[in-house]
Every structure is written in structure tokens, then in C-alpha cells.
Length: 597
Image (cartoon, rainbow, N blue to C red):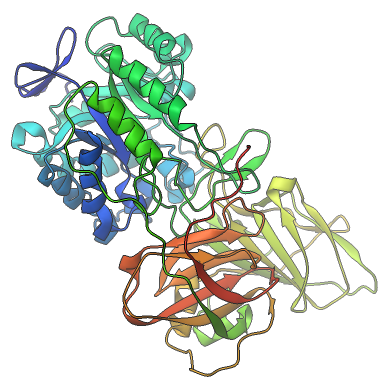
């Protein structure tokens, strides 16, 4: 492969500026991840980006979303990248595509699929043949979509990024060169960029001479641009991740960035003549099991909401930050006269659960309990061939008349321990817990939850589940049976099973699966109140909204109106703990938690 492939004639990097059809052009972009937004909402969010004054939409491409199994490349429904880019073009905007293969993004595994690491010989983000072969398969499929949608072919794509903040992870220039060669050989002609935090070390390690360096930061714009200019002496300066907010972890506060402060920094960037990509313009939601996690000494999983305190909130409403940013942009370039409407209250309603079924019984109803794998040692979730969600494990306990200590080498990330069907406790990775006292009994059962694969740092690619050996009073427990939990099948089995007039369920003592019927006159965005529940996952009409947890900060789940229908809607809750009050209620406004103030 050669890096001398043809380059764009319409959009180029000039001596001082980006140039569009020979004229200086400033990129004013906003991040909008198609895989975090219901596809029927894409056009609305893209239109609102234009109304804020943006001229470009930026998106990552999540490898593990498109390829949950090797050889798959799903572009249906919410993964239709081509349709998303076509909608960007229809709105008259340009597009930046950042295909990784690593994206970070507070997304499960940073976008790297779990199956990639089934072979321990596979490298991570470096010049290792097994890793590169898989990366090539992925990027070739991505570029089949991107190449015909480049600006030179009449499409919206003006920039493509190589890797992502690579200087924070490695310095394998051969790896970056391989990605460049593949990208050019696939037919990408638009300029190629890299992004790194503006430190000398990261900017030096994370790029190649022929790639245009950009920065990621949210404050001290003048200082950071000066550092970037030392490493990128010609061409346009660009902050390609202007952090206008931040993400949340379970058990922390909800992060916000003062509007005035964020607007001031944006103005400083534009006044300096820089191009910018607002990260995020609209964050969206980590639906299902797609949230990632950090691990810097302590494991911390990201919440379901990816609101990010962005100009467009999780439900797509413009915030105070939207209008402040619009005013800033208007000082530097024209913005449309039209402004979008502001948020109105969602419908407030309540109903009861009409049934609550213990997990084992629910699995039996679904016919999903026939695939137990026997093994001497307890297997990880990855060894079971499942890379997200839950797994179940059971083993016969040796005879004994007193409480004994069960321990594992590791728990990734949460284990609900039961004996003879009675829950006895929980082991949580974020609390560094690996041991628990268990009472006498015949069968030990462990329900394990993957709370999100680490998306940043050296723990990328680690296996999930129970890490053996499993010991009982220091002696290894053997003779395990294990299986992934097929929640989709369980949820489908409960769909449509509600009976009007059924007395409400009075208590939740999980693990259990509960069903409720939500009746609507017409579809509408809703906010599901989870404050009185314990920890689990919610499905609406078979669609996984995401995780809830009483520890917060998030206490509502966003329900896209496009996922609802007039009439009866099925709501299924998988509760792994206990609920203070098992009621179903929807509130007028989201509750993403307390802030530091």
C-alpha cells in the first residue's frame, strides 16, 4: 500500500487555513454519535446543529456496535452510518468521521470488540499481525460507506481521523503508518488528522509528519493552541474535541460546566482563528449495555445518560449553553435566524407492575435455560462467548455445617451471590470486594454483571466475569455450570402478558423480572423515575433503555418517544437487588443527579 494516493481537490489543508474550493474555510463542528441516538431522531438533531451555527457534524464509528461477532458488520436501523451521513448532507452540513479503531468515548471497551481478545496473543493498538488483520476487516467495511460520501464525490465528508488520542497510549509509528496506508488505499482522499491532548509528549507520540495534528481540551485555549502550534507549525489550528461538559460515573455527582465559562473558551478559540469541534453537541444515551468504564486504581463505570451537559440535552432540547454558543458563533460567522423551541414537560403518569417472576422461573418461561456449560474451574464471561450483560454460574457446595468464606481472584464487575435460591450478598469491583461469607447449603449460585468494559488505559481488552480460582475456605471449588443470561429472550417471553385489573406487585426481592403495561394516547418522550428501585436494567417494547442504580447520580431514564406506540407498551425490569417501592412512574423532567454546587 502507498501513501501517495490521490488527495482531495475540493477540501484541502492550506498554508494557514482549511480551504474549500480554493477559499479559506473554518470548520465549526459538533459531535453527534449516531449510535447513541434513536435513528428516527437523527434528522432533528442534525437540523438543530445547523440552527446553532455549526457547519459540520462529527461522529465516531463504534466497531463493537457494528461487529458484535467477527465477520459481522451490521448497518441496520441505528447503525446505518450511510443514512446518517446522507442526512448530514441533506441539511447542507459537512461531516468528520473518526473510525478509530479505538474511540474511547466513554463507550464499552473504547469501541474495541470483546471477541478481539479471545486469543491472548492479540495486541492492543499496536503493530501486531492478529490485531491489524481484524482492524483491516473493520476499516475496509467502514470506508466502503465513507469513500463514496466524500466531498469530492458530492458527499459531506471533509476529514477522516486516524486512531484517537494515540499519544496518551502508545508511540508505535508503524501502527499509525499501517492505518494511513489502509485508509488511502481504500480510497479516502480527504485530509487525515490526529488528535491528542496538547502536551509535548502526547503530540509527539500520537501522530506522523504527514498527518494534521489537532488538540483536545476544554479550557486555557490560548495556552493549548500555542502548544499545538509548536507541533503543527503550518495549516489551521483546530481543537477537534472542545470539551464543553463531562461524563458521569455511578456513585459520583453529575458533572456540569458553567455556561459562561464554556462560552468564553469557545469565543477564545474562534477569536484565535481556530477551527473547532464541540464535544459534545448532543451526547445522547448509552442504551442497553454500551456504557464504558474507567480504571485509575478504582473501577468506575459510566452511567446510562451521556447528556454531557451539552448544548442539546439527552432528549434533544436546546439548553442555555446552546443559545450562549449560538451567540458566540454569531460574532464570528453567520447563523440562521431560526431558533428551535425549548423543552416542554414530558407527560406525568404512573402504573403498577402486574407480575414479578423470579429470575430462574423467568428463564424457564423463555426456554433459555438449556445451555449450561460444565467446567472444573469457573469461566469468565468471555470464555462463555458473551461480551456484555450478565452470566449465571452454579456449583454444588461440599457438605458443611457452618458459614464459610467464598473468594475469587477477581470480580468483574458485580456478583450477586445466592445459596439455594436465597440471596446472601453482593461482591462489587468498585469496592475492591472479592470475598463473602456463605451459609451452609446445597447449591451456590452467582449472577455476574459486566458493568462496562474499560475504555481508557492499560486495562483495555481485559476479560469480564469471575476471575478464578474460586475458593471456599481456601480450597478450590470445582464442577461449575455456567451460561450467559439471554435477557432478550426473557423480555420477549414476558411481552404482552399484562392483564388489566391485576393487583399491583407489592415487593421486589431479586434477582427477578417484572412486567408492567404502560398505556399511552400517543407516543411521547418520557422520563422513567427509578429512584425507588435497586439496581438493574429496563426494557421498553423489547428495547434496552439501559441500567439504573439507586446509588445515582442518575435517577431517571430517557425513553425516546420513537420507541413507544399509541395504546399498550410493554415495560420489563430486570431487578438484581431489592426495590423500596416497586411502582412505575414517569416524571416531567430528567433527574441526572446532584452537582458539586
